[in-house]
Image (cartoon, rainbow, N blue to C red; front, side, top):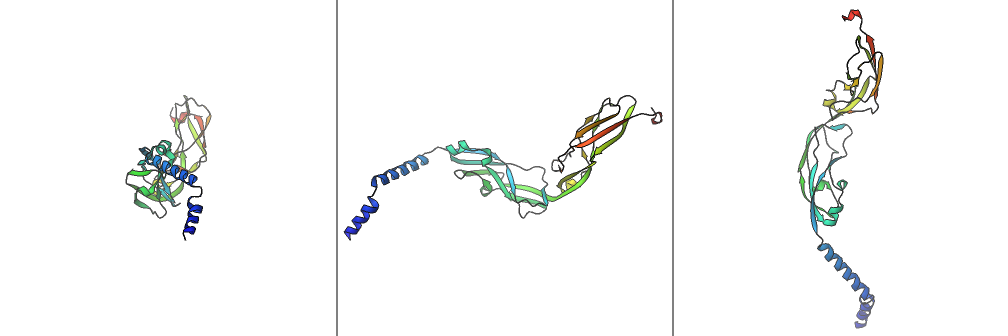
Length: 228
């Protein structure tokens, strides 16, 4: 029995003993170095991303807050931290039209695993949702400038005359037209052509087409029948 134990110790314990002791010393040294590593804390202004947003819905809240997140951990990790490393994520798979409040807990924060979350502000996010609506609206060109003496605008041609807009249903329904950046026709005598991107003032509504529209302004002489 003692011979078997001696053989076991010789083959499994004392074999490469120096190498094993060196490995143990390195492991202990590494653990002590990490344990003694300075700890830092940092505040991060992080975006809130939305996961699995239903395709038929739009966020109709005027503004979406950002999360202020305080993190603590090894100073070497804090120093390497990039803005894209930290963000909050809210799951929207089952959301329906109306208002909804979401808890913004540590579980919703994506961050490097070596850091811990100290605080999240705000602690919840309140959002409003509406059905997504797409519809055509006319393009209303915006013309500025002083007409040449004896002339007036005879006709304004817009190609295409309408554009598609999309966004929260109740906001899209309130849109009467899309407009353009101003076109200065000071001194025009015949025609002027402009290329302009149409837009709407509501920031929650997007113009579906990225292409500009062509606006042609035809001038004509004022006749005596116009009272001039």
